[in-house]
Length: 502
Image (tube, rainbow, N blue to C red; front, side, top):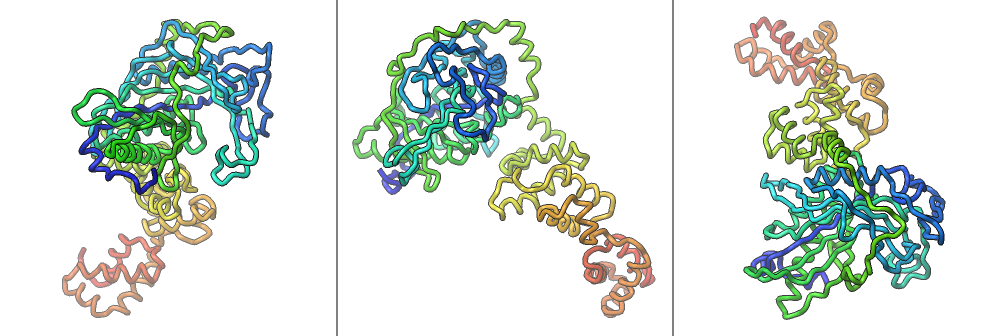
């Protein structure tokens, strides 16, 4: 099956109804691993952050990370889940070289959080409720690097390198119930759900949830069933998708691929698949195991977890304002429409604008700079808006200089350009480039006199009562002063020198 073997999307949805299940793994931002005291800090030398416990050596015993449990409960509460009064860990048995114990300590039939939901808003404002099956605690695997092959995968590699620093890092896996009824918007729902979940995780402070760094990744399960039928089709699972765009593309591709197979009488194989960023396609990985293939059984070395109810309620009362409620409040505070808020979200500008306002900027000015000049720069540079090399504090300072009359918008754009070029903070750029607005009457008067002398015909029109023509003289003064004149004061001086009442 190649990219060209797909059924057109509209044809696929005319015949089949997609059903999705999304499994999102979130790497918690704890200082130590889930069952031992090894550091989770990034960037250490390979295999330098390991111990007998996370290497699974005989005689070693695990101890549960209390912060990991607390983070799991916070996530469950924020997802409107029930929190288990009693739950325990299980061993998920399989042989992979990146899990040296040959089993993963996880949770199976007794998760810490279950039966919740998350409301997500689509781009047109429609709200879609995604039901949550469970959120459970587990540990991450190590990292395999396959060397010598063309694809970076084990097939065709000359040898493999194993780094166990990541083995044992705390994970929360959040599993949805089957997502039905999304129809042709299923890929959009998948993206919106993962985006909302990422914002929620970040708001809770339990993880940075940076998908590009593997701190949050999504497995996209998808099946098709003929329209009007209730029985689910055979599913595929596209593993470890690590961007919002890729989640949407993976779901869309699999809808088209499944439909192409089914429409020709073929059979869908239950398997895991790899997503390819370069063309948005997926390829076969391995036949998908069922739960019984993992031979789950209760972890004998860990006692059950029984969160006291008063602790759970204390955590509930301490939850921060959650993203959707925050957006509604900000939309009201700022006096903007649903469409404008969606544009802010699509640009990744919400937190930047809030931080700029917190640094002292007016809300309208903060939105103007981030959604205008800085969004344009990000687009031209091919980076996300948060990666643009300017801080909210610096943008707030530019806004303050404009509000004080020290800069006009044209000069402010030059100041921003200088900050982006690494020339220093806004005040340093202003000083080095000599960009302050000229408002001194003696300096402006000379430029006004020159503009009048150079544009005698326009001056006569103004004397004749055509005040709109003053704009041409103001423009001439701005040119003479390299855009640094105070336009309001220039107008006053033009009319004054021509003996015209404004």
